[in-house]
Length: 164
Image 1 (cartoon, one colour):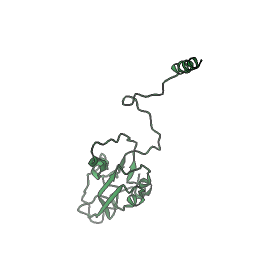
Image 2 (tube, helix red, strand yellow):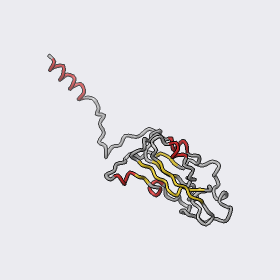
Image 3 (cartoon, rainbow, N blue to C red):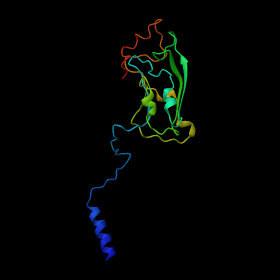
Image 4 (cartoon, helix red, strand yellow):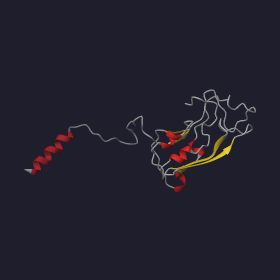
């Protein structure tokens, strides 16, 4: 009798549609609020949004972010502020993808994207450096460092009050 009930249950589920996806070929869409790999954003003219304030590192509960700031000059301008992030590193083994760094950033320089394929074979690969995190230079922009006219760096960012 129990064998018949078992077969009945099995045959009932055979006719249902499968919920299993063939992962590399089929990817389930993610929710809009999903938090994945980090990105350091740029302004449209190519300057970096990160001003080296270290608020993201201070807000990180896992202590996964390390920022070393340096001074901007008119000859070497990286960001519109007085400082820029000379070194920016995220230890992805420590990161818990909470998004507090994104919330704490006053210039919206750090954002968590939707990339989810983060696998590592070497422990040195889990430290994401500034070069790995920063977005490419947008079309029409210049790479950093830029040389600007003395005192003109505030006018080089048209939307500095309303960053994207």
